[in-house]
Amino acid sequence: MSTLTKERPDTTTDETTDDDAPKFFHYVKKNKIAESAVMGTHVVALCGEVFPVTKSAKPGSPVCPECKKIYDGLRKGD
Image (cartoon, rainbow, N blue to C red; front, side, top):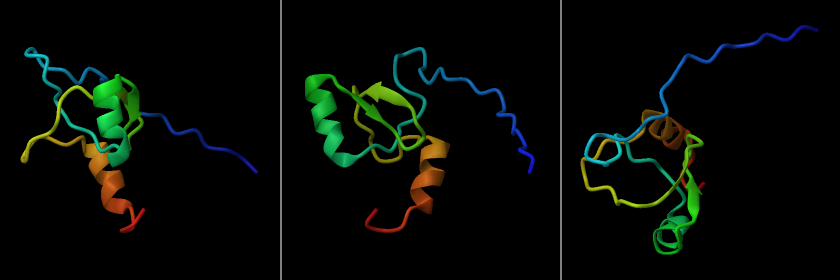
């Protein structure tokens, strides 16, 4: 039996813009958002990004493509 290694494409992890607003908003567990905003704890997004919640998304805000892909693949109720 052999194992294949997949190379990950180079990606940037800089998700901030010049005005300190994030480029993307991420999907995180709903019950962790308020805790993070108040206590400053870090949350883990569906894509694996770890960060403290500092801003809330407005309708039409850009969503992390990886989070959206994972979210769309989840069954309702997960």
